[in-house]
Amino acid sequence: MHVPTGREALTHPLGTAPPFTLGTPKAKVLEAWGNPDYVVAHGSDELGNVREEWIYHGRVQSLPIDYEYVSRNKHLFFEGENLTRCTTDEKDSR
Image (cartoon, one colour):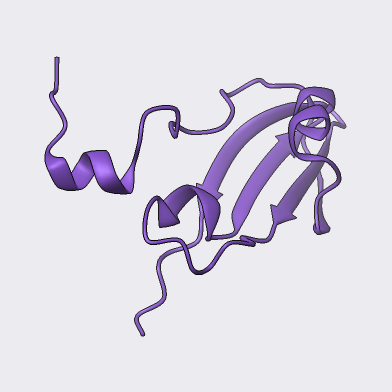
């Protein structure tokens, strides 16, 4: 078991793990986060499943904690109805 350091506890409080697990259906994401800010079509896979990237803009820029999960854009990638990958934009170098 990993005991978080004080810095880890401040920047990633309990409950800020990745928001969804792989395979999460689109309906669950919509239920939790609502409609994405942008949807980018990426064609389809060899089985005909539509590939999409859903982008949710980070909306809270001034919080001193947990920037990774509340102030950076999220990119959710789907094949068909299921989540296949989730990424977070890197922190600005300002």
